[in-house]
Structures are given as C-alpha cells and as structure tokens.
Length: 281
Image (cartoon, rainbow, N blue to C red; front, side):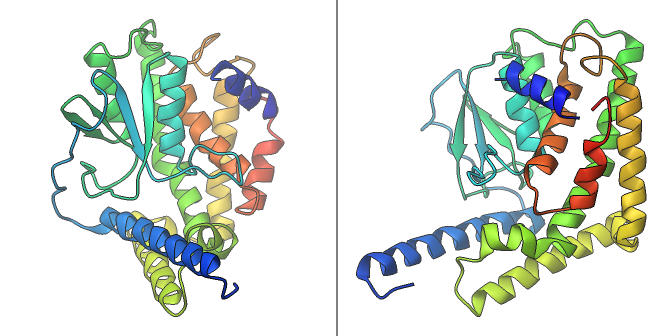
C-alpha cells in the first residue's frame, strides 16, 4: 500500500492568567465559528454572494476550513486533498484560503474555488470547469481511451459515492470522540460543547441512515469496505497508476480518500489495517 501512496506524494510534491483567558476565548470563538460555518452543509438555502475582488486575478483560489497540523494533512477532507493533488500534478497555480465562513460556498460545502468572478463548488465540477476553460494547461486525462474513461468513472463512483460514506460513518458516529470531537469541538466550553457535538452527530447519523449505510452494523460496513478495497487493489494491479504509467484525475481521487484514512490513525483502525495488507495499493 505504502509504495503507491509514497510515490504519488513524491510526484506531488487552564489558568487565570489574562493571556490564557484571552487565548481560550479566542480559540473558543474560532471553533464556534467553524461549527457555525459547517452547519451550512445542512441548510437548504441559497448561498450569499461570494466576494471575489479581494483575491488575485487569474489565479485559482481554493477555499476550505483548515489544516490538520497534528496529522500533517493539508485537510482531513478527501475532496480537498483530491483537488489540491490534482492542481499540483497539473502544475496549476493556486492559492489556498483557510476560512470558517462557508456561507458563500455554492453548494454549502468544501472545497470550493473562486477564479476571477466565478465561484464553483464540488471537486469534480471544479476540475471539469478548470479543464473546459483552459485554466489547467495540461489535462492528464486527455489521452484516455473511451474504455479508460468508463473505468475511471466506475472507480470514482466506488471511491466517492461508496467508500467515502464509510469514512463519514466511522469519523462522525462510532469513532467520533477519537478524532472529530477532540480536534474540532473540545475547545468549546461546556455545556455548549455537549449540545453542539450531539447536534452534529445526530445530523450525520440521519444523513447516513437516509443514504443507507447507517442501517448496517459496523461488521457489515467493514465487509463493504473490504470488497471496495479489494476491487481497487485488483484494478490497479501491477500498474504504477490506475490508468497506466502516469497519474490522472482518478489517482487524485483515490489518493485523497486513502491518504486521509491512513494519516489519521485514531479512527477506523481495522479499516486502515485492511488497506495496509494490500500488495498493489
């Protein structure tokens, strides 16, 4: 497993002291701002107009809510990692803007980009936009055959529409207090912390139940994970990348998911261990 991930990585390149009181207040305010911003994921209302004039022209600005310094991750989101990876492997100039205000995000989630006066959400639609408008100068998928395009589409569906929700399940329900809780919520004072945590956990549980995955036991979910990982391992085979000798968009998608899982050791340990024994991944 580590050989391919490492290769892609190389390619891409409380006291009463007043100061402590100020720090705690500032940290609490920041975390509450993040929590408030994240709530927009569940709000079915139109985003407010996003102000693009304060950013440089003719540059892709990637907006997301933070770097996980403890785990040396640009983001814990597989989709942010996917987009940043794609921009690096295509040598597309970009700037990362860390924000807690998602009210201007077109789809109420991260990542989203701004480019001049255009604001775009969803990593796949973002990449399509960048390619269609010539912002990506070298399209790594350009030489793919119709069969390879179909295969990449199937792999992408497996990763982003199936395996991703298993990560959401582990992070936001059973393993919540191992990573999400301490990382994003523990600076919020009690009892507010309790109610915010419960609200987020319940919203994700409702989402997963509606999606279908939340109706299964963890053991059943592990079976789904193992079958998906087996499929990825078989499709990759002895190739260096999924579509051959050079990376394409689908490699960024797979890498974004697997790296976010492998880097955060506190969550889904048995799922991580299953990936580690795969010979090809």
